[in-house]
Image 1 (cartoon, helix red, strand yellow):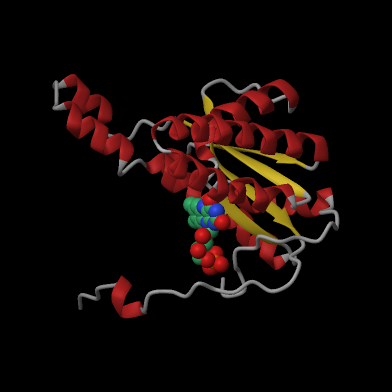
Image 2 (spheres, protein in one colour; image 1 turned 45 degrees about the vertical axis):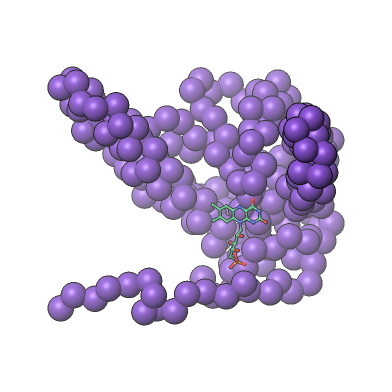
Length: 213
Ligand SMILES: Cc1cc2nc3c(=O)[nH]c(=O)nc-3n(C[C@H](O)[C@H](O)[C@H](O)COP(=O)(O)O)c2cc1C
């Protein structure tokens, strides 16, 4: 856990499939609400497909920037410049994992719906306390820690999620992914780290826990 750091620069070295299997095995045994195991990892080692995923994000960046330009060119340009990072961190990785998940209906949701509860309550349950994303987080972290154990580094990426629909379309068309109801929740860039990463630091223990004896 202490060895893990986000890695954003990778060597070109291959990540053997046997090592990828070990990472998937770690994710497979992660806990999940209702044991739904609501995840699917699309592991892309194909350079052309990684480039196409980056292109999908870039094209969405340009679409957003152009629309921003209409109201404020400075804002459009700022986003255009910043958005480069969203692809930069995975185009250099030998492996890109597209993390797919499916909708999780939390316990109590159907019951609240049945009694005609305020839609705000349903939205709150779905959006802020949803066990589906919590389960997925556990699986990604299992995978990530196993990757570190095996000498690799990762960057967990959600900043390109605004272009997720385009990446989903790509993996459905070109990666043979055809599970119904699944959608992209994150990307993971994976590979052998090129150089050391610097930790951005952490809150102190006192800031993050309350002990009641
Ligand atoms: C859910 C999640 C989403 C993240 N998304 C991004 C991202 O889009 N881009 C990025 O560079 N880092 C991303 N990170 C990495 C965090 O910035 C990083 O974990 C944090 O700054 C702490 O640094 P460390 O991982 O090196 O300890 C993400 C991490 C998590 C857990």
